[in-house]
Image 1 (cartoon, rainbow, N blue to C red):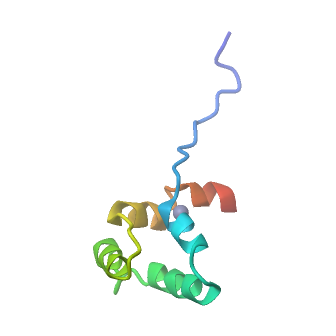
Image 2: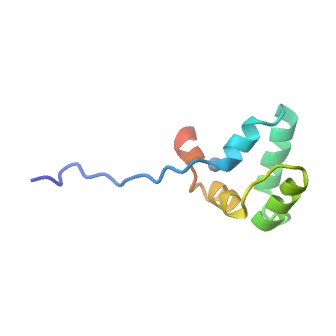
Length: 78
Ligand SMILES: [Zn+2]
């Protein structure tokens, strides 16, 4: 028997949002959290574009993953 104690493999992805936030000041990081929480105003595309205009490169898919807790943050925080 080799399948005992089988556990689902967690998808560990490096989270660009987290990396990006670590490079920000506390106040900017809080602002970013606010934008991330406001998904009505800030679709992933809009947010990625706006951040890009500030010189912060991030892919909208990485924002989606972060919001959906499909990124590595959810593992780190839990
Ligand atoms: Zn994340």
